Amino acid sequence: MSKNIDWSNLGFGYMPTDCSFVSNFKNGAWDEGELTTDHNIVLNECAGVFQYAQTVFEGLKAYTTKDGDIVTFRPDLNASRLADSARRLKIPPYDEAKFIEAVKKVVLANADYVPPYGSGATLYIRPYIMGTNAVIGVKPADEYQFRILVTPVGPYFKGGAKPISIRVCDYDRAAPHGTGNIKAGLNYAMSLYAIVEAHEQGFDENMYLDAATRTKVEETGGANFIFIKGNKLITPKSNSILPSITRRSLCIVAEKYLGMEVEHREVFFDEVKDMDECGLCGTAAVISPVGRINDHGKDIFLPSGMTEMGPVCTKLRETLTGIQMGTIEAPEGWIVKIK
Image (cartoon, rainbow, N blue to C red):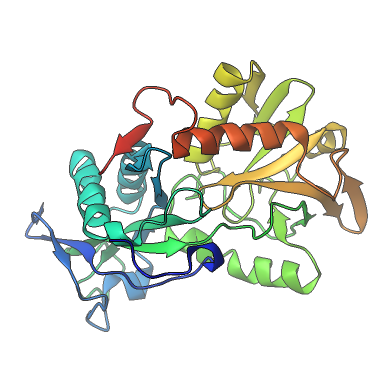
């Protein structure tokens, strides 16, 4: 029985649900894990997560399809990316098959919180791992906790995705051989100062350039860039960009469903003024259209304009969400049925 929630007016925020999933790593092994109704975590004041930011996370969603099924989208990629992130911070990876089973288990246990088809809302799933034992010397923790919380969220954009204004940022998001290609809490912490400053200046987001030369487009604080030029989808390539699952999926949609040419390559900032459309892609919004890019007082306006999402990005977004919601046939393995 679906919960008595005003689904159409749901915001993008945290709402406690019935239970979460928790598993602990101790004495060199992960336990089997279990569901818990306790949404609070009690840790030692010297826990590794507090002292040295030893934590990694993921984000995915569960949907109600047109046929009434509860499904999730490409969780195998979230499982492998979490494992990659964990290894980079010397955290023992959580088994990828068990990750998918845990996602299924916690979504099923909170099935009443999965918004109905057509509401525009979804169940957001946040898996994460953190160092839990006391660590005062600079070293990895010995004990860890893996958790998955879920919370129903409304559409990222109320009333449609309007083009946003972004600025070229003077701060660096990630070093060439740093942690930019993993989903670690520390990457997001360092972006907070820059995003608050951008908002204070009237911008919605930051465009980070490569730290080494400051000539190439990388990403924003929490999303990959996509560019449209004619019948071509272009995405920036760098070893300090997080491999977005949404971006990788959009590239396949562009090629296989829309017959577009796809280029994953270095994108120089000088090229941006010649693009037809620009978007930020990620789990939360799928695509956020960019209408204006400010480079230290000089504006670049994309031909798609500031009124509505460009036609190609619209087609890409509609196709991908159609696949997620079950109205368009999905490539094999993309949709995992939970109920």
